[in-house]
Image (cartoon, rainbow, N blue to C red; front, side):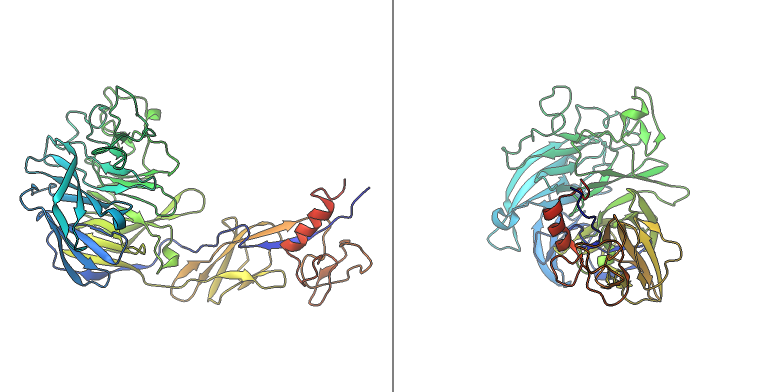
Length: 509
């Protein structure tokens, strides 16, 4: 028996799509002064509350301020333990994921002998003062030279501690440590600080159980991963790796990675060959998502940044912000919707940017080693949304100009505030408000096609005797449509569910 054909046009939003806003490239930002008067600050970190912990590289101090910019006090003083000068000093900090209950935090510094020390401390009974006697050293890694110490460390979404190690210094990695699998220098390390004393090796580490590669190694071939970060939403790792003479690079490791990447140094500097003696074919190595030239771009030393996932500026969501120490520009990589990134140089801040940090709400702070901290802000907080207009179309919030897109493709001639889709797809608009252009949320639009007609609440010329829609309905403003199976005045997902329950998913069988 043939079943009658049935037609629905269904607007799906919360059912199948997570609405989000995304800025165009370039976004409009500014750096607003937040705090001054620090001594060679090199990092800013939060422990899950309104406090911000600032590392002073040369003094070996950790100072506490809050998100209102008020000074609280000195958290820890490592004077006498830390070597100073050049690239040495107190370089990195990470709070245990369960810091609120166990009070553990981890530091990376160079000791008086120049070696890298990874050490665990614990807070005292006073939440604003660390217990200086609680130090437990996890790793001591000799440094043959004074530069390229790396220094950053962070907990990944997997709960393991990641440690960025430079190649040991000098110029050109003279002892080829980055490619040496039996050296911890020039690597990204990953350890389990809860599974052993003082740590254990996660069995999921790529070289776990092997005898020809140190098991702490997560990835190889880094020159000086000065700063790296994890996207708080996706878990992707972004690494800013400082180059040699020509190229700076940004490496992107997706959250799905099983480790074992080889980022190429010193066989390759960025995407260019550097010293290929004894190296594998180029297909053996992993290459950066972006490179920057010392000559044409004015770069000299990249400062890896972070992906904005804050609450105050929805239009910045998903954008990776970073900088170069010498050039001073704040740069943004904005997802282009096709797996790549649009790049834009945003703000000339002057030299000296050494870190992009976040507070508990994901708002970004920019640290300059000249003694100041800035807060990154959106200068055009315009967040237009689109929604169904209830009569078979989409409508945008008001603006001056509009451009509609389907599946990331511009729809020629669609420049009005409203738009009627005729095809299934993901739709959004770009709206200019007189000051800046912003991209709206996306709206998935599904057309279940068959015999055309009676696809929305309002229609005319329908056959009132038809058991279901016979294709004769046309758009208008007043109609009761037979396709409204649940009789709620709307043709929507509820009607489709009822139809499938009655007739199955094949209409004519």
